[in-house]
Image 1: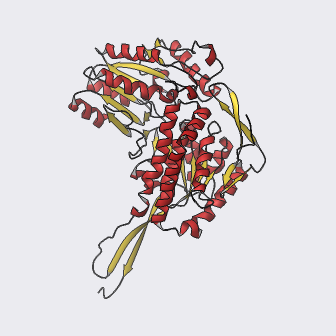
Image 2: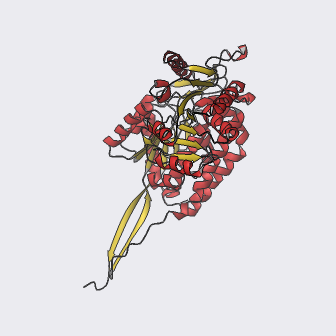
Length: 484
């Protein structure tokens, strides 16, 4: 670890924390320190929110023409692409993900800014016919200052996913990254400033739970976006509601993958494994609850063999699966593996640490396939957030839908079958925010509305639907002439 501490980005400047505190960022592949970063506290949140409020109405931003705002966002997208290699290597080092996955995340971040750059001058209102002598119209205005709290698993993507639509709508942003993954959010803020984003429009304050609580409950915030655990999401939503502030909360999932006996097993296998084991399983929409129709044991055999063949290693070596982000997260997954054995699970693949002694210091867990459990098992119901798949069996379509819906979550779902009637029937019956039929993820899904049912949260990010969270509608009614 070399160099000066990475600083907060507030009001267009790099500044230390008000109380001088810092924290150490660790490379999860080797458990070694890679950087020292300023730790934002409540005073820094106050500073950032004040800067965001001032920027909201400053001529440089509040009076910027919508087309110019779009050009600015497009410049940011292009700058992110130009620095793709550097950003991908930093993301890989920071959170451990394989280099190719990190490069895909850089492209996704650029796509968010690119997509929303094209929206800025199209956020029009409507006219409402009331009769002679009356003109009624609506306008969509920026909701104000958006407080955004993002997790460790996709820091590049999540920074862009929330800030790009907020900026497109004319809002300003105070963003708090996870202390386990602060590096690339700070870089995105620096890139945006270099591209001409006015000071105070995008502020980044890495911090811990105290920092997040200060942001979620800050009286100067007009909207809150949060991605993380259910327990923390409830606290964030409560803090926002105390100030009568709307929130968007995406709280994870235990997404079902329904594999019928008539599915194309080879096609399904690649997609299921990519969803479940990509990013070391640290993906909220990962298909980790695999429902296999009785009689399709061949697919289960293929899945177990594939999991056992995956190569682990540091992200920089571009393996199939990298480490978990931290010792805390690794220990959490270990706890679930121990619980699974207590619940009677059969370990068909993985279930332990890699044998390679060069990986002994990192936070690695083998890709794991568990069978022999019922849907009542905690391992089958709770979000593990690691490279662990639980396989359940079903008899027919109705059974598959019932098992899929027997979950507190409802984020994503996946269906594999050659029968279109089965596919659409499952899609109609499943209670989830996203249903993929013979597909997984469809690239980065920038254009697709994303959010959950039930304990997976409320509100939608991505696509055009995200703009509803960052705008508010004003109605204007005018009477004129002789209305008698």
